[in-house]
Image (cartoon, rainbow over all chains, first blue to last red; front, side, top):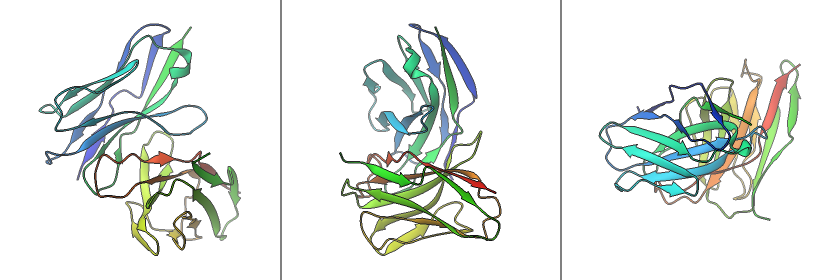
Length: 113
Length: 115
């Protein structure tokens, strides 16, 4: 069974600085997708970024980028120029074709002003 | 505006009572999902449905039931058999093509507590 591990229960970052959230996953598949979701205090889950496993190029969305290391089964999220609105719980998730999303336990990100 | 609406936002259940959580979407999505979120844990899949009148159990289906009579609606009933129902419940939907890339969009959730 696929598993997703987020080893950092909580992280802090100073406003305007950069922070990296870690995620590792376990799978025997070669074709799959990886996602980062954000859950702010409102509890609404919002997609931040997604990565296709067959693409070597790392995905980027404005201040958010990933470091996808397929061989190491690692999928970290980098947030640049952190803003107060980035404070949230961040979830890493894995999915292969036609299958369910598998979520990690989440990382709480605190942003200090 | 297109989206997923969950109601109520807060719900209280008495011992032995069944309660139903509502989830409605106007995104014309084929697939709908119910997740449970407990503190310190990620989301766990309860049930999902790819098409009207069909649904499958997820990882933690015991004590829950669902129906899918309309494409737009996927209500979740928490039965008295669910001994620890206190949690945050999230509904999601997506286009169903069997492709991993399809994004799941989430509602704002329902907080269920036991009286």
